[in-house]
Length: 330
Image (cartoon, rainbow, N blue to C red):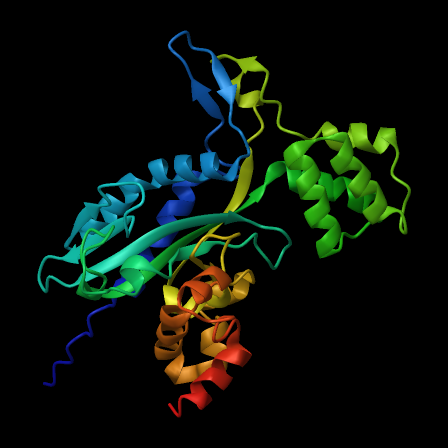
């Protein structure tokens, strides 16, 4: 009799198998709404949660962390947490048998459309990313990790979803630019932002004060206080969770993730995030990982180029990167 030994599942395969448990942890039974309604004080007053992405992300992390411990116990991993807020990674999983280390950064973002998200940052492209044999703002040296993963949490903002449904009832289908403008208004609610919304929509419909009142009625009321008898009336600020786990290089793009910070940007297409079909994978196929490393280890902002005595960076996107590689005869 021939005995076929079952191939050991990879870290990613084990994690993907565990993901359905996270959905149950975050969603109300028979609903897509978030289980979290608010926070409570010692007097049993309950307050609704802000839609601020940092607030939402932190609460999600606190809720799912015990599930990560459960995953680790079931799969013979030791768990190490980042000792400081700005250290990499958020969580280190260490295989107790092989001692292989897996870096996992937690990232969350909200849907902008049915197919895209607001985007994420995938960690620094300087410091520990370039000096991989030095412990600099890292729990372990970057090179000590077998793989570097991003665990992504995607959700829908309830206020945006309801406003979009209202506009659809007016036979308005939002363009990406209009939706960005509307989200800016939702986040700030100023007269100036409303005027920008009106200008963006003027070709399709002339929005008036009544439209504004209707749109404002879908905002989360952060001033109202609830109690244990009526807290279920609180509108969940987010809903419809989805998850993915991918190696960083599989979902990276060729632009920094936010403003002037030195962070790697991510894909915004949900399908590409979930399948790991990022820009470097599409452009470089089997050489994608090496191309990702070479790109971001040599990427410069304008200020970095000046410090290095250059008039401008050697490259600033995939196209100019390929030209730069050719010029080096690599």
